[in-house]
Length: 303
Ligand SMILES: NC(=O)c1ccc[n+]([C@@H]2O[C@H](COP(=O)([O-])OP(=O)(O)OC[C@H]3O[C@@H](n4cnc5c(N)ncnc54)[C@H](OP(=O)(O)O)[C@@H]3O)[C@@H](O)[C@H]2O)c1
Image (cartoon, rainbow, N blue to C red; front, side, top):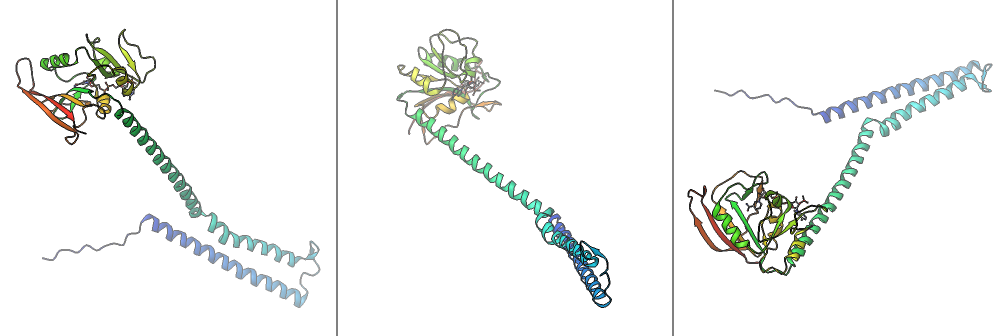
């Protein structure tokens, strides 16, 4: 009927225990010092009295002084040393003082690291923003992204495509024929050989990246757009890294939406409906040549 009430045990955490132990140690130190002081006081008074009353020790000299005066002075030095041990050394240089100093230094270092991190992040954002700004200022008004992405935006795995849809390949061929196709180095390497009737522009940070004759290598997306400036419609053909950067400058997206969810290691960025407007959409069923349903969708930039 009655539930047993759990008796709550008072708990002492590690920090509290350390404080208690430290306090006990300090009390013991002070007690020893106090006893030392009393013995010293009684001892010296006793010696002085003996000397004054019966002339004790006056006949033996140490450093030209009565021996008990020298002993008292030496004792005083020992007492002062003891006093300083308790009130100076242990107070300022004890374990807890050491720990406090370490904590202070660590906190200082952490604050410095945090400051540097903040500065680095700010610079990184600034560089990223200036890159986007540079890209936005490209004059080209008809940069088109062409991509095939699944419902979960998967576009590739192990540097290869995930599906084979012949209708999609045909569309790619028709749209990009006689145009510049801009791609990342990894996408270029996923081709067995360059595609006919297209000018390939490969983006790479490698200074001595070797490509077959006719293929152009540039070190940034801006440079790729500059090379294709006389093309009425240059195409950005992937992969994931380049699409991500190109989303800021493209005016059009030719998307093949493959209806399904796929495992992948490379993805297309989310298409923001406040930036992109769907202007065409054609659905294709599965058939013997197409293992998956898909839709050709065109988006145009609003902003
Ligand atoms: N479904 C589709 O429509 C489609 C289309 C194309 C590709 N894909 C797939 O996408 C995958 C490849 O994409 P990914 O993201 O791994 O690679 P990627 O974008 O094709 O290439 C990445 C490379 O491009 C270079 N790069 C990127 N940004 C750069 C910049 N700002 N400046 C200079 N160089 C830059 C770097 O080359 P370096 O390392 O040489 O410096 C980087 O390693 C593959 O699986 C492929 O099959 C799918």
